[in-house]
Length: 392
Image (cartoon, rainbow, N blue to C red):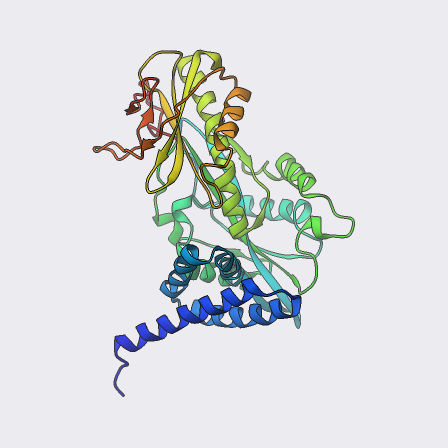
């Protein structure tokens, strides 16, 4: 038997891309729940085949096309790609159950290295107990990865994420633990502030609650987060010695990833102020912040430079990237200014003109706006404990 020529696979991929686009567009135009479910079922069936084939290119091609031509259909497709990636079906005690891959984002900053890597059996068991008691619904099965992931150590792409989701899903029946030796081979980049993730999967019979806030007399999301932050993080504190750390709400994987992207922007600003106060032994009001919009083909990000009040050099900088749905009309500058003032900064300069997204030719780090309207390299004062010249 001869092998199929490569062109056959490519043409099949193109046909699948067209089919994904057609179904997602039809779903976006649906006006009844019954029709929604019809198109959703067809889309899920096709997506599960594509993910099982590990055909990442087909998923990305369809998403890229719709992002340019039909944003509403793009949203429909993206939602179901994520659902098929992080949700699995398994049988536990002869009962059909649904599993969901979840993540716990941890925001941290330190002059030293932010930890990542294996958690150890005792710490993993403590985390399992606290998550079960404070976050997830009663009776939910729970598996955990025995690893604290940096962003660089997370699975890349939908298909690799689905693999991890399936491995953790299988372990929920026995409330098991997944050893992640392979993740330890990826050395995390060193930043002053960064995100770490706890990963796991939860399982419950279809139609039953997965999270505490879904229960009839359950706590609110805000109450769940407060309880988790108060008690659940105790086993992680020794691991984060020398770091400031706070947790976001444990939720499904992609929702956690998006929320950590959003929350890390303000966290980085507050961390920068604290870091410079400690490093220079000064008060926040002795710092000046300079904000500038930076464009590629469109507005991509804001950059915030930190200097001593009315002095050079550039001490530090924070990049505030625009996220999905944000543009020049979004009140990002007002949000940045509010966070800085709450942190004690009183002298804030906002440039009216836009800047290019320039980076240092030697180190590749972004350049930050000065009072005079130049983009400057950071010159952080000498400190052997400083891991990076800018905030992630």
